[in-house]
Amino acid sequence: MKSREISQDDALEIIKKGESHFFDYKSRETSGQKVQKIASAFANADGGEFIIGIEDEKTEPELLKRWKGGEKIEDFNPHLQALSELNPSLDFVTTFFTCSGLPGITMSIKIEKSAFVHLTASGEVYVRQGAQSLKITESQKITELQFAKGASSFEDYVISTCPAENIYQTQKIKDFLAHYSPKTEPLDYVYSENLLDNKSCEPRLAGVMLFAEKPQAFIPRKCSIKIVRYETKEEEPERDFLKETISIDGSAYDLIIESVRKVSEILSSINIWTTDGLKHLEYPPEAIWEIVTNAVIHRDYSISDDVQIHVYDNRLEIISPGKLPGYVTIDNILESRYARNHKIVRTLSKYKDAPNKDIGEGLNTAFEKMKEWKLKPPIIEEIKNYVKVTIPHAPLARPTELILKFLKTNQTINNKQARELTGIKSENLVKVEFYKIRDEGLLERVPGLEGPASAWRLTDKGEKEVQEIE
Image 1 (cartoon, rainbow, N blue to C red):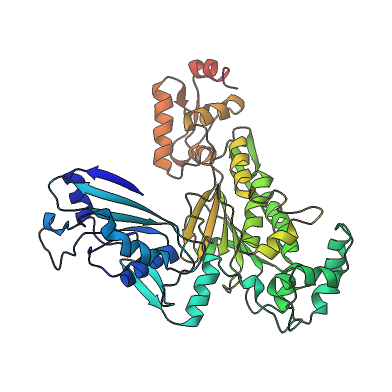
Image 2: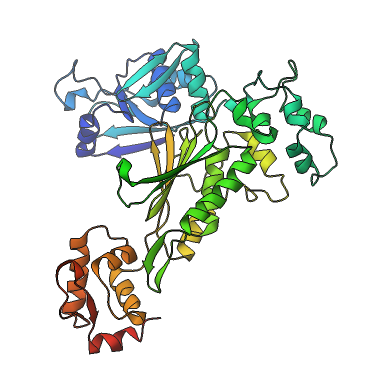
């Protein structure tokens, strides 16, 4: 617990802040039940902060009069006691604010997004949506929340349509156990790893995804990988740019291997301009591997959709069903270690050539390799119920440096070539780069070439300059 003296300006900013998805305030007279409601709602969503000791504008329209804190810190003991009764227990940080000229002490309570679904003492479940703490009453919705947060995983779902022998008598499990130590029989392995339900002896989804010859024939959800090739750089491509769609089926291990192989094959057919001339579109293989692996092993299998890999002329997009699990956020994803599908992650890591050999380091490796290749880092987004990772083919170097380096080995450069080199999408912005270099006396227009055919070349001064570029 911390105590802070703040200015009236700061107090006014807090009062005027208004309720939102991440912030709320309550009267000092608020009940323990309401404290539990809002605290659990924040924890069950994306985290947030609420302050006790500020009146609602409906009951007190005058701003400064809305600050009505407690006389002493002990006045907040009932609220703290209510927080301690949440199930499971909740981590939170409290700060007490005092302000000269305003009455009493207010208490700020900061709640982090939690890896669990938290219930009030009366067993109710709330989730924050916008400026409201909404009660969830349908059991199916509560189950979906557990899957989304990773508190429960659909990998434990029993697949009654799949005979048990379809996971412990397959060639896939035999190949896996051939390199497994200590030597273990297939049936013993699936039981010891809880891939078969102990009561019904029916396989769990994790077991089917790992060892069935074709899991997609048994799992009542889409769980393949769909690769889509668009011959464009547009953000929202029209159907005319769609070249091909490929569906990859198979076990989790096979999905990763075959999808990465197919993506590499597609990339080898795309030519772009580089500083060394026209070459195949290339990305660090490790970056593609790690991001595709993450999409397969951390996806939410309760969502009936395939992992999507979109291949564009200037980027790759890997879209995985399910929000970020547990306490993982966009901001802490490179430091956090959380597996939604523990059984799938654990078993894949035991393969001789494990796709997730360095568990928890996949995205870090992708970022490091992109930097080594002097490409901009991946972009991670959470969009509705999906996580999208974009691997841009955009160099880290400044546009001027790239244009001059290109002209070190090529006599001329046009606008289209410069756009592909620099990753700049706008023709006009590329023209601005050309004009900047021209004004430095390094470039000149190629005589006789106008309009779409126009191009640039080095001046004598530019020829000397580029010799110093490595």
